[in-house]
Image (cartoon, rainbow, N blue to C red; front, side, top):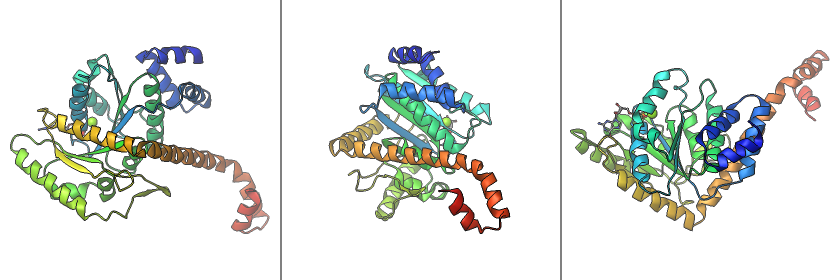
Length: 327
Ligand SMILES: Nc1nc2c(ncn2[C@@H]2O[C@H](COP(=O)(O)OP(=O)(O)O)[C@@H](O)[C@H]2O)c(=O)[nH]1
Ligand SMILES: [Mg+2]
């Protein structure tokens, strides 16, 4: 497809063209990737979209929750939802992708929803970077609500905060264990914490867990902000003017879904009015620009190999080699 065809297809909201453009963006071939970048640039920034991250350990119920909140929101005819996932395990086990699709039955069949699992075989950092481009393409195609599912283990979970406006953490009933399973930093980053699976016998426990998390959150020092590669991660601290909310929900029984959206829209109103949303997105652009520069510089390192070897065999100190090689 040519650039013009891609642009026309995305402009028309054609999901097949959108998928093709995302595949180009994920490509490791510079030409293909550049074509995708040109298409994204053509559309420019989309400020009136809502980017929501859904993070939690495997099995917490992220996909089921997305199905529930997604179908609920699509009752509004003005909403178009794109679901993207950052799941490092989905590349290895096809079961994960299939599992997600079956858990998002209604969403995947909906004409105003688009679902795209992360591409397999790429590295975690690369995944989040690709997801960002996929998100921008979805927004260009008219999807005004982006839901990003990411697994809350490893380093990738903090990167989702660099992609989204709202950071949602999904937990399960049973406080103590979960408090240990989830890294402290992630909890600090959450704008809304959802204790999912609040149904049946677990409902009471879920309420208790929610209370425990509320209390635990108030104990967290507000001055410590998670730091990622030297770039400050914007979190639900005084900058955004928002106080983290803890709610209970049941994705399978559709409970608490309306409360989730109520909080999510309160949050959006809050960060739009105080202009933190704009500042936050600017900060994120800076983060990704830095990261891209870093990646390019690292890729260049191999070109210095010969010069390094020559310098050393000429009897120079490593520090001298570096000084003479990088001018
Ligand atoms: N009882 C109960 N089970 C749930 C709920 N949400 C998800 N599950 C179940 O938890 C399992 C994992 O769900 P899934 O959405 O795939 O979790 P993910 O790995 O976080 O995406 C599945 O068997 C779901 O049916 C819920 O609200 N209540
Ligand atoms: Mg899932």
